[in-house]
Image 1 (cartoon, rainbow, N blue to C red):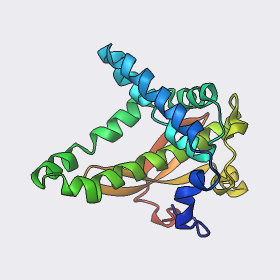
Image 2: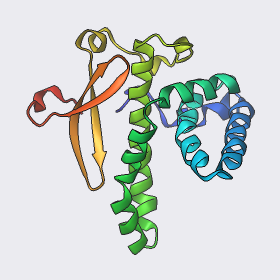
Image 3: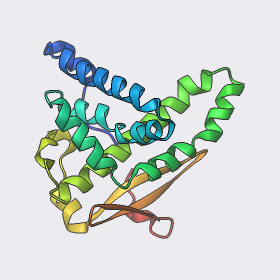
Length: 193
């Protein structure tokens, strides 16, 4: 996913507009809540995935309140926590290989690869949520992430399902807000990079 008119200065826009403290406070709350949930082993794992979309939500809308950010993250991950766990599990081979390079591979390749995968998952879940007109969907307001009429008409989106050491293109079919990934090797002309 690339945005043609996005410059490197976009990384520092919170500092430019002097609005860093609010998202930092919400991320601190997330860490505190996660720490308490980690005291219950199973609850900690579940909440890790339930809160996993908060950074992406705040990146899109840094003025959003804490309750809204937590609510939207919970809604996005409803029914998708296990899928995200399996997606993260697919990176275990890369993590083992990274240990052999004393973390260099992790720093240069694996972390950016996994973060890009999580960001693409966020965009997919976000589009499903907006299409379903679920509660508070209007809070997703980044014009760079606009859902086009073509996406709505075709009801499909391109998604790159990254699996461990291999990435293969897939077509994402959206039905009732759920996430279905089919192998697109039969239809490579439908996949846009």
